[in-house]
Image (cartoon, rainbow over the protein chains, first blue to last red):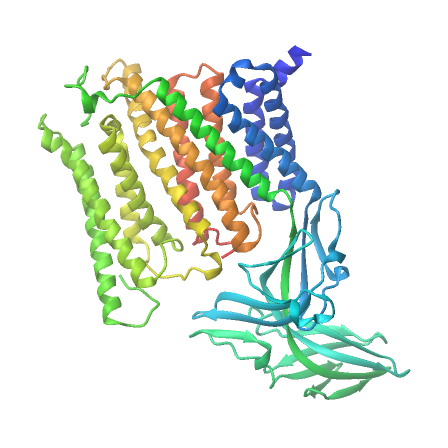
Length: 338
Length: 285
């Protein structure tokens, strides 16, 4: 057992694992999709290597600062592993007035041990306002939300990029992704009505392309084009908000036919009627779940402190008295100008 | 030099002029310090001290240039290549000057360090000083910690590599049978590793602070953007060298050569990646 641990705890293996980590980091640089999965291999190897060193190397254990540094690194590795297994990285788009529905969440990455509890999150999207500085540089995003059930005004709060909404371990942070959504009501020939939103492309990034396709319940494809949205002002401060959308007009392209609609206007299409209700803003949120982040930070600070203590102790053992400063002169004449 | 951005304002124009003047004077002071250092001199003590006083003068002038720009634009020098170069020419000069006045033996490396600082300064003169506003969402205290520790890392590491280059240079001469005696090489080697140790601590803290800043600013503590990846590789390269020194009986010249390689890596990380992508972390800006 001991020879195995000695081999596992060798510094040569440390170096090999570090080089492997460099390799996977480079792979991650080339292809971000595979990086996080592949770094677990050298990280696991480094973790095992470190555990073995701590177990078999008494001299290593006696250097307390160095030990604390490496235990901190080990903790970071373990916590990173737990974080990867339990994480959720996702996104969602919410229209003003819409309740958050976990079914609309688009998952980007999800760890196999993630305790999916998005249904514990209650939020209703309120008014959104995105401020821009001169030159269309995005400033603060202000998103009013209601976090209680039934949009209780008592539970309202403002969410910004710097102050995201946190609930049930999830972190909802507004992203740069936002735009217009047209609210439509479909009334079938049977009298059944259904109201929903069609999101236009991100605004003002795709200011020139404010349209999207929508297929009616009868299977007819319609192209919805939003006209006269809020004019963008690049030469000064400007805000994107839904209160500026009163002049908006919806144009429905149906085959060769273009039908302009004002708010409240409707059009008969195959199998029913489509009514243009409103224009609102939608806001994109990134959703992150990682319960280990705070502990990773604590472990990192402890590790760095341990390393600093270790080096200070080492420095104290062999004082670096500087003869060039204290002595009368150098023992050897320097060829350089000191 | 012209500065696009804020409208013409007599005060702003005056500030721009002062900033430009201090930048040119500061870089000129750096150049002069390198020239005086490399100029063959007699053993006159005052003349031997002159490069370091010129370095200090250059640091002071660059500090004025940065302060003026900061006050004019109401934001720190974080965004453009010009600001990265200007702030690094200042901060690396400052840390180097402190080390050189505190540990005079470290001045052996000045023959490599001062030309390096000159190069940074000259580069700053060639880059457009345009303004790119810092997104307010990115302005949180961790940005300051991140940038400060990054500059302390490079500022401490640069004099170490300067010494390593000097020792490497002399080693080469020794091997060619033309021995040049450097002032107590063993002590200089010890000094190198102490500076590297301190630099490694700052580098570690820079990565941690950067992660916290990124998490607060754009919601991800690590996203493998080019700057993050190369910063991690730089940290790993330093860790590998520190471990190799313990593990293998690596000849000292190999260690010095590897440290020089890490400086090249760090240089590309600090100045190459932002140069290619125009602003640091441009993927999220």
